[in-house]
Length: 511
Image (tube, rainbow, N blue to C red; front, side, top):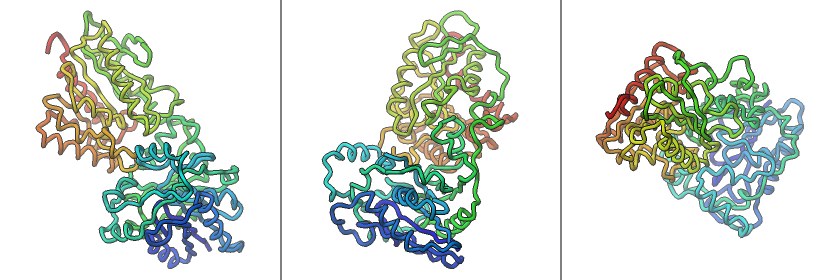
């Protein structure tokens, strides 16, 4: 017998689990929902003194009520904020919990408050600033409607009537539950875990595997055989949008099923370290600070193409992006075509780093333009993956010397879980101001749906604005196809995109 203990997230209560709990019970399992103090019930202000420890105690009460039968395994499910009290309780009842399920939630660490997981970064900053002055009775108001719920995660798949009910039953979140650091002894590290990723909210197994491949030590624990993963093609509230699918995944997780990640030191290198699909001759390389220049065999100032890697990439990832085969391959290919191929290491180490990464790119552009090997009036910028959001500034106000902007498998609008919906980094909006700036966009046919949706949003806006866009399609290509799909189709796509960029930046003399 499996006993599921279900812990809801911010602003919500036991009501969100109603259908999932019924399905778990029908499947022969037990389902126990946790009523978190101050959150479960109508929208009424909770009493003072409620903090994270209060909610951990709520979860412990339910775990202890399940009993200690040897044939009954407790599976603790934490959704959103709920993973914080769930982990705190599991750490104190590690011998009773058979598995912890992170349901579209983060990986809370000892000493870190739940505030760190708040997706709205501007709100997070305001709450952090107010933290020292917060009273134990202070609360965060719940979303007042569909638009506000979307600030906390994708509502994809949630029926309108259900979303209205969620709003009606939402309760203020006690601020101290977000500000009090999580205290873990380390006992919970022995408990098997499962991550359930909701892809419409911007998370996927492929993305997590990519981050593991970058070598981030903090993520290596995810390759433990006791750690499994599932995906659900829905938004952030799967218990409301896909209860049948969620029930199936929870039952399979309890049975130890799920996808297991490959360690970073496996025999097969991660995609970003695999060979470039084209055989490109080496070029003379000069290193200037955080920028590498791959120089063509030519006299006089030449046009330049600056390649901007995606991310986030962990700060201690080695090698750094400017030494990745894909980026050096593109830079050498540009040099073979008569342009200076430049690659920048920028500081997009976390989703909160877009401002400083954009500043790094702007500084790199000026450094490249100032180099005597470069014709400062003929420069192209080429962005990859998550760096697509950094195109915003260049689309919104293209300088005269910017002859082309290229993007390959880019993210062109903030994903729901990224907490950037209110930021300026929104290329799909900025393209309306691109004017006659030539754009070259490489689109892969096997892209993650949530990223593909941002590309289609961008292209629709570009068409409405009459922007000059050439689309290079790779129908059978995946994200990061250069290392994943070394096929004739991908090789031709790389060559076609490079020809398009070099033609626009001008290979020889004035264009």
